[in-house]
Length: 489
Image (cartoon, rainbow, N blue to C red):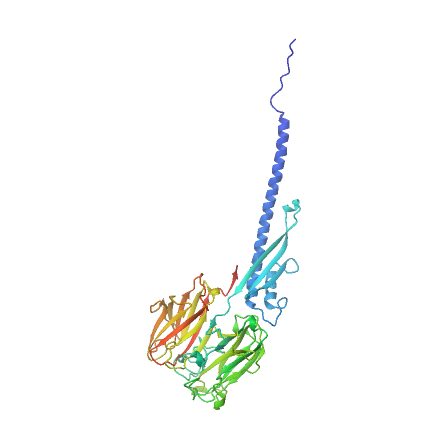
């Protein structure tokens, strides 16, 4: 007997299918929620990392203004660069020891740099589900302060007969056209002005020079000396000329390094000083004199030497007694030895006098080190080539073969001719004739490529070729157009 088998439905139970879908959807939803939560946390952590980076950068940029740290101050709390870096980080919401760790660090081998490390534990949101309650955020920034340009020298002396020039300063009542734009109150070429005419450039004090102490000289005995500080108008051929007897005080004050090495005008602690006057005793002339208070224990950084010239009281009035050209030299001794690693140079400007007739000298004008790459250098020469005859002035050394733009400014600040090309040749070159630039500024502008590197000692030279015997009296400045304080990788 044949039995019929029951026919089963080939389709699955829809209730079972719905159950499987629900399980799968739940699993996918958990994954999606986890991914969404992770994305939220990732965005949150990224924003916190960005804020920490901003805090580190701000702290480094603010603190590096006070670098290098003076030798007398141990690095840590109490050092100005250290404290300011932490203070700025706190203002950005990262208070050391409370909700963050902020560590300002000196950079080995780079005393003008400051590194700041910022660390903070940041709470999470959805990642807590996976047992991750906090994530440590770390950020680091390093800032560099471009050191002052070295003008004229990086050796332990500046000026002297062996160098074919002397450092110089003019009296306050000598005409500006005599080659000094900063010390004189007179605006034109005539002497004996009775009031302040040179309102745009007269400075009191007139000049600042640097004595830089590198790490190798820290702790040694530092002394600064002046050659031929006393004035005598009878030795015009060798050292100085003009002026009336006893008409002025020539003063030198040496300030110890402070917490703002790029700003020479705010140093406050004088360690050595001296004032020189007119001197008739020949034994007091043409010799090195140590500033009173020296020697001192050398500290790392830049000692600022302030140079100023004053009228003696009572005021000499319209007779114009204070109109000398006083020339001198500067040197720094280490342990009494003039041969050392100290550097003497102009800060922002240098005023000089070439007293040797018949010379065609080549001078160091500025040390263009590699950290100035990508900036714009402007060299300014006041009253240059001021002679009866002709001369060729060109810029050589590290800028050999580099073209420049030239601008001429009058003593009153107005533009005589705006930026244009030089007089041709492979180098930056000017042909000068018959006091062509008397009482005027020559500005030379150079673009320094971002790929610039030094070939040897990084010096830029100014090369004079005179057709006649000069007694050149001039003043130079050098400036960098760019960010003096900036972040570095």
